[in-house]
Image (cartoon, rainbow, N blue to C red):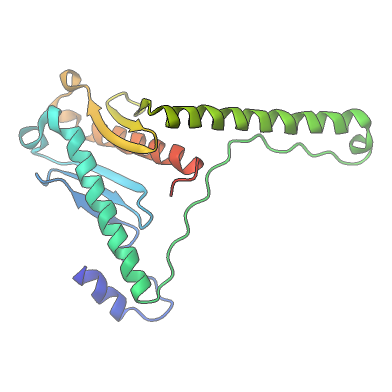
Length: 204
């Protein structure tokens, strides 16, 4: 906080404040860390030498969440300080749309009755698919069902209940001390996937 306050005090009006795109938090052992941006989105997960002895396979998943929580708390403090000094806050990134691009109709084709009917059908199909996905998501949230978001390598799992991250786990028996880099990358991808899904449904 002291370093950030010094940066803000010394920065000229309109000049960006350094360090706000990479805010780091670590776990209690100091061998696991997370880096987030000012919005709390995960930028990096790191697992350093000594993690096997300090936290081990049984403790590395909770350590990642602990480091992430601290990093996000620091990001929250940074936003409060930005507001205090009258600095603009970052806008949340818009949710990525996976909709198919709208087909373009030009000239005589657009005037054709069949072309207009096909364009209307595509719009209805996209709207129906979007409503069905939202309905599935809301049913899962309202039921309190616990879901898992798994990293692409299958090493790290984030447990989500409703809209809350309630835990994380790894395959303890399949991990080795030299899997740190792969595990960190998998944790980052899983956490990004969780945030992306929640952001698509209004969480920021």
